[in-house]
Length: 231
Ligand SMILES: Nc1nc2c(ncn2[C@@H]2O[C@H](COP(=O)(O)OP(=O)(O)OP(=O)(O)O)[C@@H](O)[C@H]2O)c(=O)[nH]1
Ligand SMILES: [Mg+2]
Image 1 (cartoon, rainbow, N blue to C red):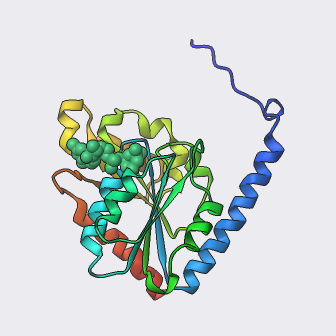
Image 2: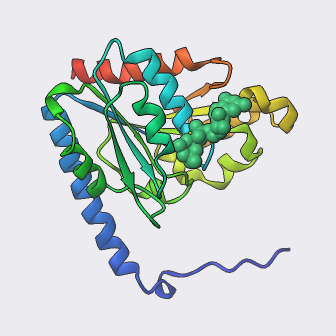
């Protein structure tokens, strides 16, 4: 039996502050959402571990959807601009959200980014969160849907290890399936782990390298956009 130490709330001295922080974030997220809805903009945020393929997937989505919609992309990255530059190259208006030491985006930063673009000229915003499978789940941003991108290179247990990330998501993309065999990871097992946590969630398998499955992800994002139009 492995000894386990679990912190009790009394031991977490900043618990009160954390609650206030999360409440403040939730309020700002609602404000972002109301502002987006007023402009008929659908925002979708992409979360996932470092290197899971968030930027590559957003790049694929931008290539597929940019002729149909006016896109924008907000990129959360601690300090570098490589990701945002990749998407900007496609002619998509972008905003870099440098969190410096911060391990997640928050609704305040996203609200600031919304003030940097012309909301009358945008239909669909992709938000790339910081690579992290824990903190982003606690901070809604005001998006209509949350996508988690996991990759087979993270190993076979990452879904079970990070349930909160998946419970808060609307779509899970299991990426880098081209590497599944060499990694010895069974993608069906990963998909089953996700469905065990959240039975009605959409799970999609992709290789952003070969393009396998990316059309299905684009169709799912389109359906989210269209469901807004019907609302
Ligand atoms: N083989 C393979 N490589 C991929 C795939 N998707 C992304 N990559 C590569 O994986 C690396 C990381 O991809 P990114 O899109 O930068 O990942 P990210 O999640 O945005 O990473 P961070 O922003 O640093 O958290 C890059 O070298 C991509 O080319 C895939 O489906 N298959
Ligand atoms: Mg990235």
